[in-house]
Length: 179
Image 1 (tube, rainbow, N blue to C red):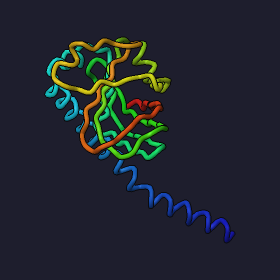
Image 2: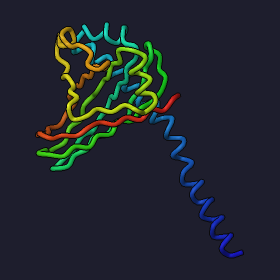
Image 3: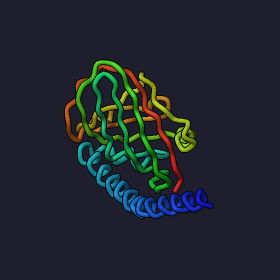
Image 4: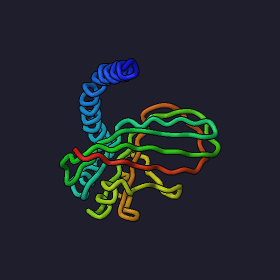
């Protein structure tokens, strides 16, 4: 009986302590959505030609705040919003692991465009990842005019801050959660 009381008290303590987390998840999700709108505007401001990419892509995912750090072994993580034909359809998580010569930390934005429904569905099924050979293009004025889809995707990044020296290999993995 005493063990049952202890277990019951532990369950109640967990419920009381985790209730605020559920309340924060909606505010965190709303902040990510708001930040994704800001990031989209910043991408278009940096390269106005990107507006047509957002309009014509089968889908895209915007990670407005990706943090990256490393010293020998590095990692990055961020949360984003997934759009299909400009309609929000879910949330996504980005995680990255790298190894090699690297030191420092940085923050950046990332947008991935999907050329067709096939690539977007692969992403939504969480079967999408970038290998070490994948490359992202830093957004500058007019850069999107010369970039083509590679294997059905196009990736752009925009530096937000920090300094990182890097000559490493690694990959990005993604997880999709439907709204």
